[in-house]
Image (cartoon, rainbow, N blue to C red; front, side, top):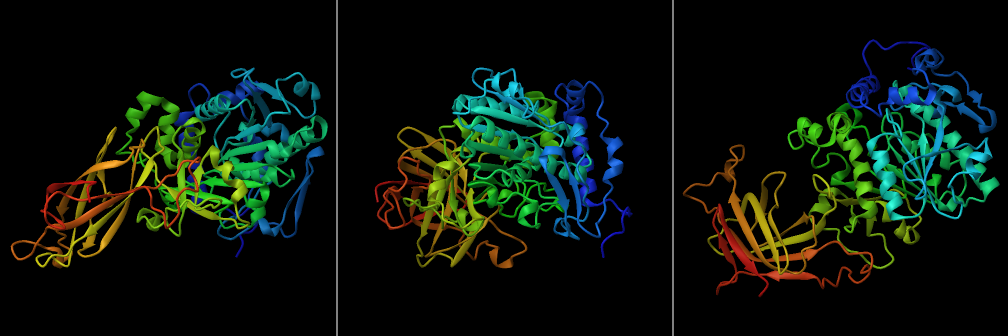
Length: 555
């Protein structure tokens, strides 16, 4: 049953909890220079007074369609399609245009540090700026409790200008990104209308080609890009960086970012846990291609134990420390995208049924003119022409814990022997070190999530990664440790059983194919597979628990 107009919940909703948590982040991370309240003071010369308008935005459910018009921008309607008892139980209209005060700030290689404010209602601001309609345009859209002065916005802008001679436009909607979250979600619709009006003006009065426009939005900014894209036919590309989940996941396409909003929509999911588990990003596919690094939920390096707040505070400042505390997984999509802009390492991802299958090495083919593998990040658009008409294509990859996050991936296959004295199965932990002529990767954990069960006479495949390309593997050091689990009596191994592992050979194959060499490998041509065996007369290697063995490419 829908709540009555103006009805208040007795217990805090998950969205209210989200707003409180985000408000903590704002207090922790934005009291320093560049904080949202200080920024609003600079912009408007007064304290933000959004609360004075919130009275007009009390959650309600309409009996009929409700419509409001916003000058030349057009009208906005809240139909019942914008409501859902679970996914979107409350809705409000946006704050006024004056309160949100959406601005468009241009940076180019001619003005990389001092932004120029462009105004569709004042053509002089555009004509006298460094905006060049002949160059591609990249548009950065921040999310909830964020401003154009956030470190990540500056860093992305710098990297983009380093990469190309482009128009970089930052959408400043800090006046509408304040809590409460419900109000901020409503404000995104109006910001999207403002952006669409601005782009349509550039198209009609300055000859902008919408195909040259690439919008990059984080969290609520991703959906804002979608709202703009649906009003500007022919937009070239939208990149959604962990689009916000609350009030968007499970909703119709017109409520959220979707593939119809641009010719190419690519999405990076990094915080796809449920909002009830404090996951802020969507897990639902919402683009032509959806990338799920590390399964799109928990990102390496975001565990507080791995990345202590005091250390982050010292190294990167209060703003970044607050992000790590509150939304590390959520902002990791930003870091991956920024890292992809100028990195020589490509974030190669593979289409697969599931992340588990990907980690088992079942998905590795990179055929010519196919989307079985694609590069995540800025270069994803290079694959757009080969996309099929289907949408919601899921691709997986893994990353490192810190910069540089990009990794090279290798498929490691153990072929196990079954001599008479071997147990049918053993379980335990394994590590390998990969050696080439020029480099070495030490102590790569094959069992990072716990012991694995191995059956003698069968093979088992793992996907491992390393920050650098190693080249042809010449030698492997392999470590084995049997594990006894008291909860599994059959695994207990003392004098009456054999805890050794018997390995016939190890195969290593590089999974990632550079853009230039794409198409040179398919399922039947494993030309880069290296087989390694141990020295000796036997056809297998006997490895006792807690010992190592060495394998060479001399099979």
